Amino acid sequence: MQVLHTKKEVREFRQKCQTLGLVPTMGALHNGHKSLMQESLANNSHTLVSIFVNPTQFSPNEDFSTYPRNLQKDLEFCESIGVSAAFAPNIEEIYPLDSHTQSTSARDETTLNPPHTMGYILEGFSRPSHFAGVLQVVLKLLCLTSPTRAYFGKKDAQQVLLIQKMVRDFFLPIEIVPCEIVRDTDGLALSSRNVYLSKKERENALCIPKCINLIHSQIQNGVTNVGTLQAMAEQNLQEVKLEYARFYSHTLQPLQEVQKGESIFLIAARVGKTRLIDNLWC
Ligand code: AMP
Image 1 (cartoon, rainbow, N blue to C red):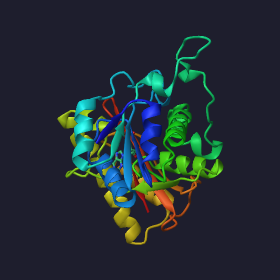
Image 2 (image 1 turned 180 degrees about the vertical axis):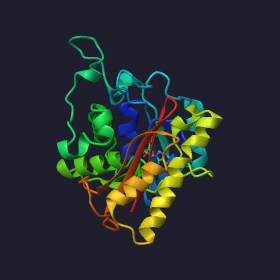
Image 3 (image 1 turned 30 degrees about the horizontal axis):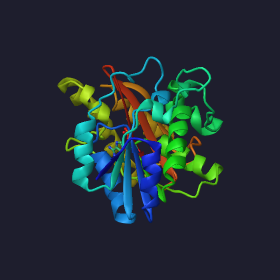
């Protein structure tokens, strides 16, 4: 496996790839990331995993400085899965120093505002600058690597929908592939942030996947009224500090009735200091 650090190395690597699958990550890799890599390996001649904790998607009060980082372990993980290359740039490689001011330009570059209808609800409501930062770094990575396909988890449902929209809006010739949510044996969706949870907090957090299962079975049994389902969810999420548990369409329009195959049930909640998200594509 090649380990790349610079844009120049990435461009040289790209020249050798017939088709390229890009898997953008922030590291602290787990089996959720692994499933994205495997999906890419199965469908492209080469797979590139980027490992970069992107500062512009964190608000000042969030966990950018403490976000789990272990590059050596991540590189071994990528190698064990058999990806062609890992791209682990430093901040200046992605956000170069401004030649005039000599300050990091991350907060003063050309940026992208997410669409109003999709970008400022749910995650974008409590984290209003988050998706601008996500789209900024993803567009940089897509432009730099010119992948054939790029792989994103359905776990971050709003994120993958916004990235698909950006790719459509800018006519980028790249296929965005949404990948299934991978869960731990106890049902909790895998996340790099799960390491923050104490044993007790983790037990409390399990009401989230349990609620997702309950909603899934209710829908299977023919319950489609969103008011009924949301009230049921709230009843079953009392061990966490619920931020939202709501149904939206795949274009993030609010729904009155679940439209099978076109709806998402999204949850965000705090458990202690940790903020968790999960969802059901239904
Ligand atoms: P992150 O490193 O958390 O930014 O995640 C990188 C990519 O992995 C994103 O596209 C995530 O949606 C995806 N991902 C994270 N956790 C999971 C999971 N449990 N199942 C599937 N994909 C995931």
